[in-house]
Length: 202
Image (cartoon, rainbow, N blue to C red; front, side, top):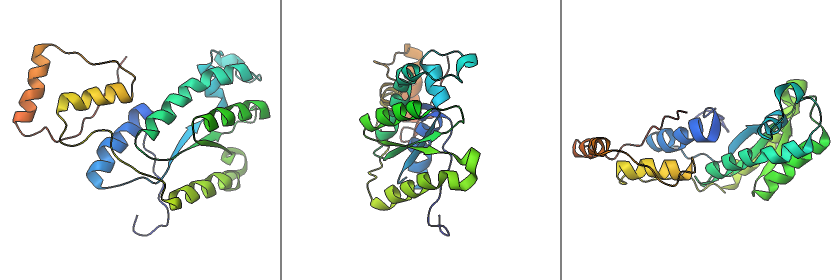
């Protein structure tokens, strides 16, 4: 951060996993305020989210791409809840068609963000030049209004509820009295101001 004009770091897999922890824990504790988020997506992933089998991903299927974009939309919304501009990098595969790429671009624009094709696999750094320049422009614009989605002084239980509702789409959280007492005990022991590290299990 001291010796470079721009620093790019990988926050981890998914806006509901690594990025949530990066924003709520790492940035809070390190005093960092991200200027822009690059959310990486592929046309193939959109197709799979749209119901296409792995063996059939090579064939054009614009309808499936559009169907699968709902998942992408959730990640965009999660990231924007932290007040940071989001750019979707379409990690281009040679089998991607113009119509499929345009479907993602149109969807992302409807979410108030923009999608840029990155062809670094095929063309090296030249293939991601447009993405890099746009991200730098946004970072320099001062548009970011970064803030964690919960404050330090919020009770631990409410912090967990906030993550569950905001990031995972839960209506609410429940726990038996023993677990609730553990939360109260942690606060009495002086741990109430700490951020929450949420584990996602199925």
